[in-house]
Structure formats: structure tokens, C-alpha cells
Length: 399
View (cartoon, rainbow, N blue to C red):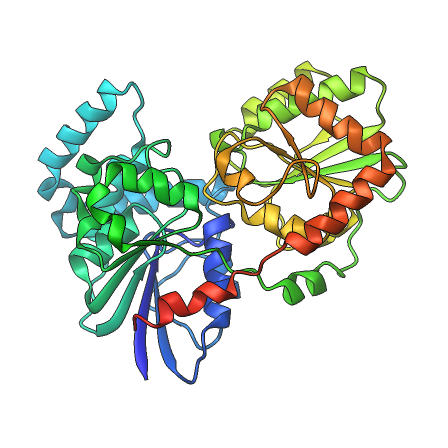
């Protein structure tokens, strides 16, 4: 039996984390022994890992990484971790150097600053694996590179390398030592190869895996979703973070309301910008119209029942939520970023909009008032859906 280790930073409710769970569910347990190590040892999705996967963390914390309580626990955990094995002292010159690089870019990113420290402070294991997989950028990549024994090593990229705040100096050029770099979209791959041109021959695309049958079944769960509301229900799935540009969606919602549209817009997700977004919502008198219910264990009944799906992100790696909306055959509006344009064609299986409140509202209004257009886009979205399982052998053949 081949032994594979997967490493990820947290198992909070996010696109990459959900993609890992889906991938683990697709691996043949008769052929492969799977270990999983979570750098920060926290996240609610641990409850969803398959039974055959061995979690290496001791004292795992299954609280959310985005709730107030969960973030408080994480901060305490990080504070304890940076002193383990003297990691913060061993990395002091690295930290100073990276801090001044970030200062030069006028953007201090605490997570990028500490990933190397947290990697060096993490547990070590004697097992030698056939394949080790760093499933996300940052600490997991540094950990697999520096502290794992494996015949082959693979790293995954789920986001725009530079816009996410990484650099060769931060990474210490570790990626050139991996056997393969998998990027979730062609656009993510191109952005990565721009920074690491010497890795061009070892990069490939690998779509996140989505189990359509499973999510459609979960969509059958009976949940209350404003059944007494007779207007248009708009849904967005995503964290309340800068890349998701939720503030633009709030402004677009205000435009729709001022035009007399009867809508409610729901964003299922949690994140650091909640307070700021709530203040914006209140300032526009949208408290009963633009709603932030938070993250939910099962978003699929909401996806099934919504009228329009909107993914108006500032940047993405490759949106899992967009593909899930395709699986549910939803009419949708997406922002005109390259990673979205890899997944949809304007006026065929989605409406594409500039990231501008007025233009976003225009496209949503088209779906509200042109029923035939909405039906055609929804049907074509279902045809466009891809579950990504064809890429699985790219990974498993390396073990």
C-alpha cells in the first residue's frame, strides 16, 4: 500500500479546505494509506474527513477558524507555537528581512510573516512517505519542503501568487525543489510561472474535485430560507475577506433597491471584514435586505433554493462555489476576472460584469426581468459543470 501525506494550514470552512475533503473522499482506501497533518491543528471540517484518513495532530481543536471564539483560540495557539522548538528565535533574521520587504510594499501580512515560524514549530514524524502533498500555500509548503521525508513532493496553488502577498524571498524559493506544482486554474499557473519561470516544466493544472451527487443530495435537506419572502433571493458563498469584494455587492444591492427591485441578498461565510461590512449595510439601510447569516455546515439547500447566484470577487484561484452553482444549474452573475472567465462564457452560461456596483446591478436586473435568459443560462451552466475527477490520476500516479 502506498503512503501519502497531505498537509494543510487549517481545516476551516473554505474553498481549498472543502476541496481537500472532496479529494480525500475520492482516493481508493484499498490502494493508498492516507495521513493528514494540519499545521495549526484547528478547523471544523475535521468532522468531515473520511474514516480511513489518519489525523496526525494530537489535541485537535474543531472550532471554527473564523468565529470570534475560534479566532481567539487560534491567536493563543499561534502565540504558544512560535516559541516551540525556539522557532521564533531561529527565524529572527528571516522575520526582520521579510518584515522590511512587506513594509516596502506598504502591506504587512501577519500570516505570511509567520508561516515559516509556525512550520518550524510544528510536529515532526519519522514516517517516510511515497508522496507528500502541501495542499495550500504558505506553512504547509514550507513544512513539506523542510520537515517531511518523501520520495516525491507536490505543492498546490489555489490563488494568485503575487496578489495573495507571496514572494520568492518569503518562500525562500522552496517551490523549485518540488517534483510537481499543481495549480487550480490556468490563470493561477501563469501567475505562478511568471514568478518562478524555472518551474514551467513542472507545473500543471488540477481542478478542485466536486462530488456532484453528494452536494445535490445535501441540497435536499429541509432548512428554513425565508419561505414567506416573495421576491428574488440572491446568494453568494464566500468568506468576508478582501478578495471577495463583498462591499461592492452591498453597493450593487443598494442600487437594485433604489431601482425598486424586491430582492434579498444572502452571503454565507465568515471573516475579518464582518464589522466593517455590517456598518456599510446599516449606513445604506439594508439591514433587512443584505444579510450576513455567517458560515453554515450545509450551504447547499440555500444554493438549491436561491433564484440567482452572484460571485463578484476581486480575485480568485478558481472558485469552487461557482462550480457548485453550476451543479445546481443556477443563473449567475460573475465578475470579469480571469479565473471566472475560465469557467463561464458571457451570455451563455453566466452573465459577466465589471466589478462595479451599477454594472453588477444591471446584469442582475437582466436575470430578474428576462425569465427566458435565466432559464437558458441555468441550463447551460449545468452542462458546463465539471467534477474535476479526471485530474485525480495526475496526483496518484506520482505515489
